[in-house]
Length: 204
Image (cartoon, rainbow, N blue to C red; front, side, top):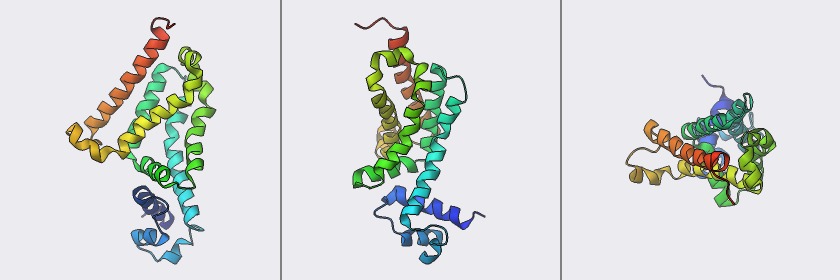
């Protein structure tokens, strides 16, 4: 049986992802767990502390693929593998994408901190990753933040827009076949970009 604190985190994560921070009350969380609202304060100081704990847990989970990437020799193939791992992780754990979407659309005061904590590791370790892609970076160093965010936008928007994609795709967007096609599509875009600027003709 899960500890009460973990049950609270699970319930809060689902509610924050579904309704957003501003629209979720501690009473909602308590009802979802099946406890009285005052009991929440035995585990979390207030709603903001609970929200931060939910976010911290998600960010630790989603930074794992980057750590795996950095624990090996970083080359083009390992970067592609990192992309695949991240796409699969988002498909299995869609709450981070949903939570970020709510925060962005509602003007959530936590959004700046959330984005900083999500993207900072990518930029902090940027030299390690981009050394493997140096011919690309040399040509477009100023675009690196946009390249990183564009990839995240592709992955996260697929998650948040999934309910609309079912009819277009003709299958559940989160089924294994759909996710593998999403991974293949992103991989083709990345490989085409790398091929153009690393092995392709010089662009003048």
